[in-house]
Length: 190
Image 1 (cartoon, helix red, strand yellow):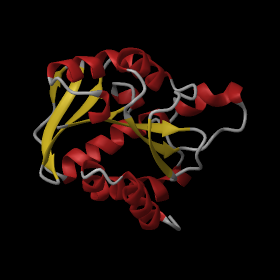
Image 2 (tube, one colour; image 1 turned 135 degrees about the vertical axis):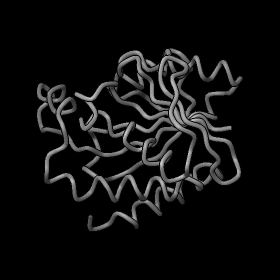
Image 3 (cartoon, helix red, strand yellow; image 1 turned 180 degrees about the vertical axis):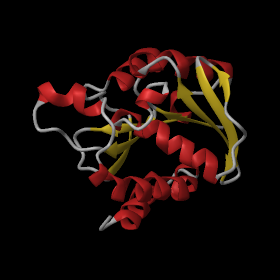
Image 4 (cartoon, one colour; image 1 turned 30 degrees about the horizontal axis):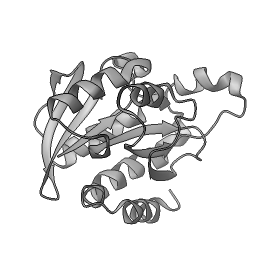
C-alpha cells in the first residue's frame, strides 16, 4: 500500500494558492484513477483507489501546512506503514515553474509541511517536488506561496498535473527516475 500525501492548506480561500499544488495533484490523481469519494479521516480527508495493481490512499491533511505531520503519522500508524511507503507531493520554490524532481529523503529546505512530516515520521519518505518558482527575494516568499497562481501560470499547471497523474503508476512500480523523465517530456514547452 502507498500513502500518497498532497500538501496544502484547507479551505476555499487557499484552494488555488501556489502552496496548494500538492492538493491539486492528489485531487487530479484521485479523479483520473477513479478513487472513492473523499471522506474525513486522520485529521484530513482521504480517498482510496488502485494504481498499477496496488492500493493507494490519497491524503490531504486538514491541519494546515505547519502541522501536516500529525495527519500523516495518524494514517501511517493506522495502516502500519513505513516511511518508505509514503509519497509526499508538494510545492518547491527552488525549481522553475512546472519542473519536477523526485527523491527519497533529504532536508525540508525551509518547507514547513516537510518540516512537520520529518518531525513525525523521519526523513526516509519519497517527495515529488513540483516547481512553482521563487519570487526573487526571501522576504516575499510567504506572500508568494499564499497567493493564487497568476493567469500566466495556467498554461503549465494543467499539463503538469495531468502528467503526474498519468505517470503515477511508475511511482507505484518503484520507478521514480522514469516517472520524472516521462513527466518532464510530457510537459516540455508548456
